[in-house]
Amino acid sequence: MLFSAVQPSGLLTIANYLGVLCHWKKMQDSYQCIYCIADLHAMTAKKNIYKKKNKNGSTKTILDTLALYLACGVDPNKSIVFLQSQVLEHTQLNWILNCYTNLGDLFRMTQFKVKSKNENASINSGLLTYPILMASDILLYDVNKVLVGEDQKQHIELTKKIARRVNRIYKKEIFTIPSLIITKSGSRIKSLLDPTKKMSKSDSNRNSSIFMLDNIDLIKKKFAKAVTDSENPANISFNKKKKPGISNLLEILSAFKKIPIVELEKFFLNKTYLDLKLMIFQTVKKKLVPIQEKYFLYRRDEVYLRDILFKGAIKATKKAKETIERLFNLFN
Ligand code: TYM
Image (cartoon, rainbow, N blue to C red; front, top):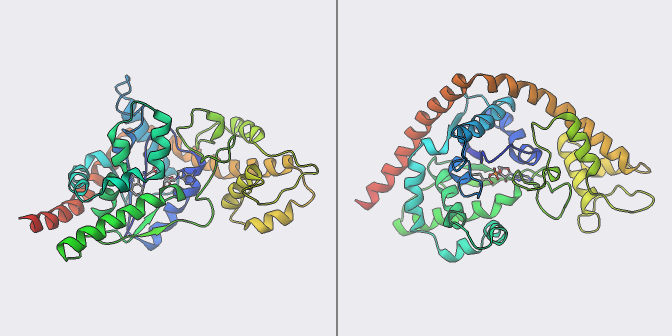
């Protein structure tokens, strides 16, 4: 069984696509997949989906996210697709796991350090305990694989640590210890404007990220503005330290085209940065246009989308309840 999830905080980017979404369709052939829309995690953001004044705000971003899942090939008849907040056991297990997690481990999480620095004075404690809710998402379903991008690796390692601790204390295999799937290419996509930072859907500068639903002309403009370097003549080679902008563009192209970076380097010998950007744009356009078309078809049918979440929550709840029961049997 495999678990993967995305927060419905704003529109998804090509980093989410390359990191996880583009693999979801194929994973369904090898695993029973559980694809979650992590709306409770999205509540930790300052501009969180449930704080919006517009009453339909939360539903909108959730249904947008679901329609994108489907457009990327997720089949709700093969996989369990559900909304985190509709399966109450996630918050129930979250509390229990709180009591088996060391505070020091939470403070050591890189994502917490970065986010708490950005938010200065008013940090909500959900930002700190965020990885415990992730652990609950995963451990509820006895999954043996978790698919994430590189930025979530540390959180999954903590999940394993918590699971092992509980198993050790009770001398029983209560939780399945999951292993991590991080794909070789596409799992660490950087911002187009500051390639030392990750590409993120919550970046305040919209030109840093390509959103899955960006208009095609806008995508062309964003790639045109992407940071490169001033080497003369142009040198299209992979070197993360010395050439972070070009390396990121090569990584994006390699992940979309499924061609190793060394081959791209050979192809772009004596070519210009403009040539590189044009090829990336054409490649991304070819991939995103059909996804966008499917997205708009699915997005129109809200009844169908809500029905998927309704049925998904029933299936997920059944599995989640078994785990909670197993756990409470130990305590009683
Ligand atoms: P989110 O929405 O931030 O990211 C969703 C997935 O996209 C990956 N990702 C990236 N991959 C490559 N390059 C990037 N720049 C990039 N940015 C994001 C993330 O690694 C993630 O896999 N907390 C999770 C959602 C979640 C979850 C879980 C994941 C909630 N519960 C349980 C796994 C297991 C998150 O980061 O969402």
